[in-house]
Image (cartoon, rainbow, N blue to C red):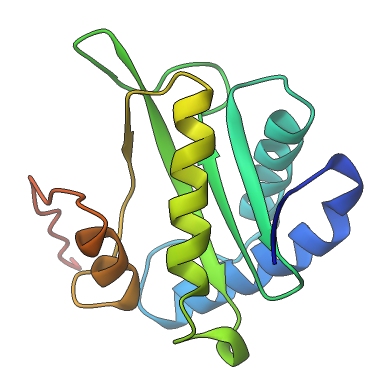
Length: 151
């Protein structure tokens, strides 16, 4: 069941965030499962759950999370003067995948973000992955491709 995370959920979130970082790295993302990135997730979590910044963290039991909102320090982007929320990550543990949990977490996050006054959202997904299908099915547009090359 989906619920809005509270500050007391720190340990559950930290465990899921750590798994998210490791999972993304194993799938070829350049995000490191480092102490600095672990701290970033924790700081965003507290910023949103304690109301210091607009954003939301939703949990699905101990199986998944989604984290959306303003970056620490304010707006990352502004589009036509409308606030844009950043999608920091949605993660579902392997045992809970292919059950629609990621879709439900993301859909519920959009409801909360609208209530907070956000007019649009932005996030990054791996093309061809499960997250790309979720956001495409939800009506996200893929306006630009990000390309990477190892040197």
